[in-house]
Length: 578
Image 1 (cartoon, one colour):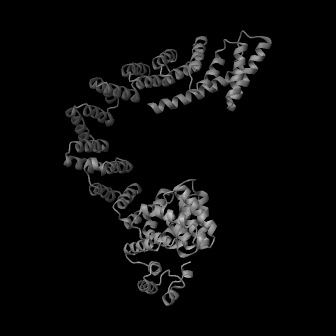
Image 2 (cartoon, rainbow, N blue to C red):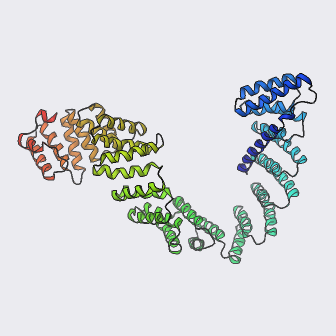
């Protein structure tokens, strides 16, 4: 009702503006003659013109001139009030509209604006009196009754709202929305007898519509008259076995009574019912999932219902999407990916599924799929930033930095300002530019990423590491990696970076502790970790152990420095450390 009323108000005031505009040529008051008439007409039309242009200050100036020429004009009062009522002080516009209505009591638009101002000032009773007069003069206007009902309802004047609805029914006959609204109001007053008699009007007029029987049953059940309510519902189920809405209602009812057998029975009947749209079934199962803790239902239990739908409707995409969601919740990522691929094969223009599929491929580390899915997605959604990022990541991993940069830049242009994806694009661009020796640009990209997402610990790590490699801004690097490590204290990559920054700061003892922690927290430490550890041990004076670490790094051979062999032969000089 509230949304309808708001829409009606908008329509009414648009119509009001149109009507007033159409009457501009008639604005000259009959008592005005000669020069006064010309001046009034000119000022009035200029006031209207500036109002349409949005220059309300100039508009008020011209309407003020009109009042000075002729202060008995209802139209000028309306125009001034319509502008002033946009503000917070409604006293003057209220006074003006009361005067306007006194001058021209039959003008609908003046009365509507007066009622609206009264409503804004919470003077609901007086606003309703205005609508009483409007309805008396225009009994054919349904919208006036609806607005008045809403006004009384907003102040919990249920009986008065019902009186208006009775007048409405007398004027227009038995009408479903009005009858249902009356029943709701009687229900709020705990008058089940009157509420049920209203619903019975609909049952008698539309005997073939079982929804009204269901509404009556719901009324009884909500007012502790369970016997009557269940009798009605069982009657509906018996006479109309395909009424799925009642089946769902009974399932919910029995669930509140902890009657698991009947709950299961009616859920399964409803899910297998071809007369219910599958989207509604999906929504019902999602409702169970959201409330599963309160309902004492396990995810496995709910998933059995999903399987029932899958068996009966294997080609329904809404059901397959629900299944994909459950598979993801159960961390069955490969199976979830297959479901999403099936959905995409049938429905290419669903971006949300594309997005879920690309992110899942990223989570699975399937770079080939990320690239191919991203490229295909661009055929349908060229203005979405995520596909560009997904295409670029495999290129970044492969070392194709120039091509990756192009895709990332395009994604950056499309990404919303200050969005998470924009910060990620900046971070990846930082990686690309660094690998292409555009150091200053790379560091500015990292700065932009952190400015958007100050909790981006992975960018903190990478930025810190690159600064340490270049012996630049080491204090800033130490601060950033400390923040990252605080968020994830057992992350071996972060421990390694922190140890290396400390090493560059010549805090060798503490660097040793963190590098050892990095190796202990890594299942298969890389060659670079052992090389770093060797460097740190050497500068701590443990040269024999350092030599062992360097040799181990050489055996592994991944991402080691060019002068590792020289370290093994000659040790680590100060120059090497620099």
